[in-house]
Image 1 (tube, rainbow, N blue to C red):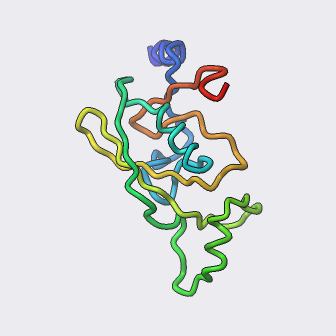
Image 2: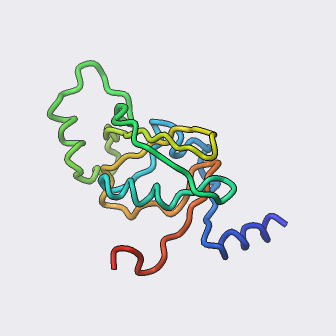
Image 3: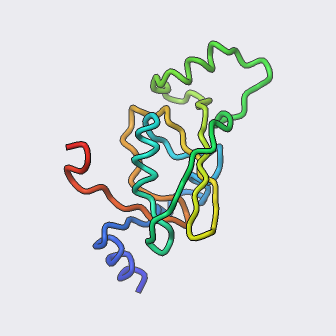
Length: 143
């Protein structure tokens, strides 16, 4: 039965969240959704749906802090490097600034966390726990 539901969702263009993580992906500041710049944040959020498949509304709360907590003597120059959008080196700790978004699904309000400094990767095609993701149409609005 679960497989049948999954096939129906996939057939409708809805992609359920991957089950490989601990459920905090996108729902905690330390485990944000990696996207590329503000347009990438908006594009990813526009593909997100409530758990029942209905449209949601969202608004940016603002920058809420770094993905990984910084030590008190963290050099400002290093923080500026992380905000430049340069790809991280293998094994490098991610101190990117994270943005918070308030998401409303029919009166149920949650906060999602997005990291817009990951332009080296394609945007994830999945949703945080409790949401669905609608795959973009081939040749969508960028064509």
